[in-house]
Length: 558
Image 1: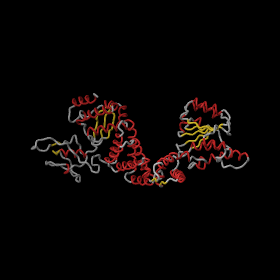
Image 2: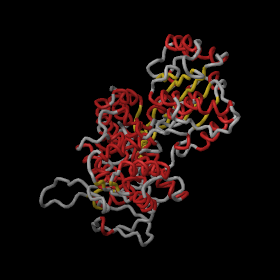
Image 3: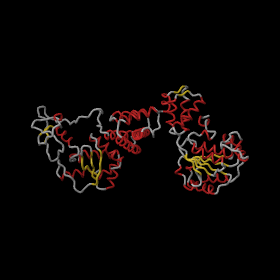
Image 4: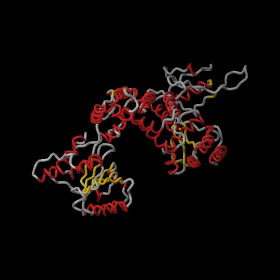
């Protein structure tokens, strides 16, 4: 016999953690104030059906009936020795019927039940109908049941149980006495498991019991089932064996992943995700675990351990993670991963949403994405082909396209490199000839100054549009009337004609896809913005107006 059936509560006193419900029920039994319909609600596996069976036994218990008839005080607990209690406990009573509403959802099933309910009980004092998962009934079935609940036969009691009370019609709720069961606390689950371990003489350590209680997420039935699973494998159960059997090893990778993100090591985070993918883990569940751990970090920062139920080892890990980032940074990372969860449903590659989230999160925390994540990458310029004897390529620096807002050292007639530029002195910029490296450095100094789109209009933008067309035709259609309006160091702003296009392109999943494509094409990381295009289009410094119009026409012929 399964542990859960073997150790099902035989008395109300054995219902751990539901004293607020049990006390009220026992009081109504002792006062002989039972009603014709009960509704038991709450999470799965916390004792709703067991309570319904105990109530059915108490309603028909011959010992309780005899004591009340003789004027004696009663505890309200079923005696478990009379014929009625024994028949109900073994499932042989013809006057107590259990119905699974998930498989009897139709109106015909309920009409058949109502017809049988009209007949008097055969042996017991009352007929009891236990309807489990009652929220699964159809609308017509609820309407059929409503009539009976309005005018119930005196010899019938309905006990309904559900995990989704919001799906129960208000007309049914108003005609039943409702009891809300709460999720079991970790200490209560451990206490219940300890009793079973003692009875079954299972050799298991306290850490394993705590881990099982956490994994059960507040459900006694799940906890007992996990204990049975673990105890069937080894005679002596340690925490390492428990982790292995329950598949908790993945949680270690979750902590490593979150730690890598918080400490700006994107390569390590990507490595963990790819390894789990290769091992066949469900990355959707992995992403949910990341969100949960990040949530716990925020709770730890705000209120300490108050709202976190986990093992002592895991709580210590959460404490360490909470020291790595501020509340604002942790919240920003959490929102990024929540956004990636919705993207998971819209792509065939489960790695893509996590990869995008890693890049976004590390960027939000001020990190720089590079192969060597612990070093700041150097600015690299593509080599210029030239004869062996030719001097280094000279770039003419003009003040018009590049408006310097930060101090730049005075540049003399001699060539300089990026290492020669020192920002300690405030010197006005002077037109001069500098090396290409120096030009790149000067451009880096103008972080927030808009830069003309240059060749992106015709070449790079067309490549972005073509790549988008291959990966997401719907998004490519939205880009048909879009154009690169402005580029800064970290942001690409698109101009569109209509608000509809702006709203659709600005959706999280679309910007995430587009940012990935832009990064792949350009080799640079940009955040994508979108705005309603104005009538005036800025002239490109590298082409006359006629050429610009021709280039835009080529772009929009998608």
